[in-house]
Length: 360
Image 1 (cartoon, helix red, strand yellow):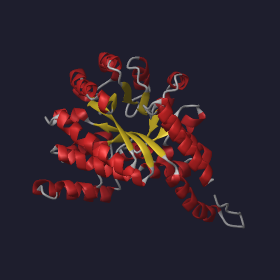
Image 2: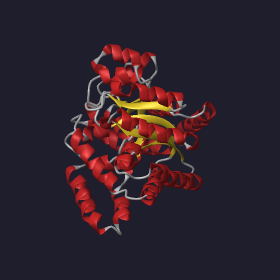
Image 3: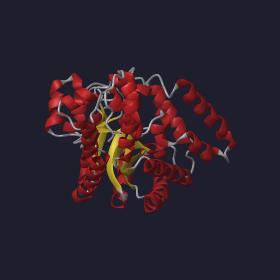
Image 4: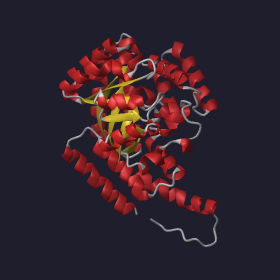
């Protein structure tokens, strides 16, 4: 890394000189992403690809893109974001649509030097739309396999249930996840409205998921308090927590998560865009690190929030004055938290350390 000597330049001037090298350092690091929704990854150009032969959708797409550009990807509150997410999913009318967005997402990941991603598929929404989960999975699985051969990005899948639809709905999603466990579905989780779908409702479903050999995750502490995180860990057996934004509100829950080494899938831009935080700088990420928690960085719904994994890492580094060793440590956390065999984790760690050393 080129050192910038302090020759009387002010802080802002030094930042301006150092920023490009920081961006280059981040760009070169091999990465893993764990909290990434397929449906939230559809960028405007891909939306236009999807709707070019669907005149009834074209105006909806143009309106949606214009609104995002005008409002800088701010939704105001979580319910408005859920409504926007539902609109985007309605544009996915056929398995070929899902295949297209999978291909475009993996291409985007490759551009960011992401080597492995666990992509969440909203299987619960597919059921809600009365589409075939089997046909959709066949399409995205084939698209991901082709993209891996072409680009070297490995993908596995997390099937997500809509928690406000209840336990019976979640059980249907789990049934499909179990059917495809041998074909790259590594985990089951719940997302959506935490307040209307408390974690306690899904204790039996999660037990069944573990019995099937699936890993389990949960969005928790995103829109409600830290008790949701406690329940997700103690009753559901969640191996990772999505967001965990309210965790610090209860020291006993912090201790629980720290002692069990439960990784947090942190997504700061998401929390700002959905109105849960006013500014990126308000995120508790530095306090998470100070508390000895396992932190990973993720983009969540990157196209809907105007971000990417590289941008999340860069924003976090600048907003919280993260050192390069801390950036690498967060990358290590993501690799170790991935639902991968130990030898695969070890290979990714070697790649990360080699590139981090070469970039210093």
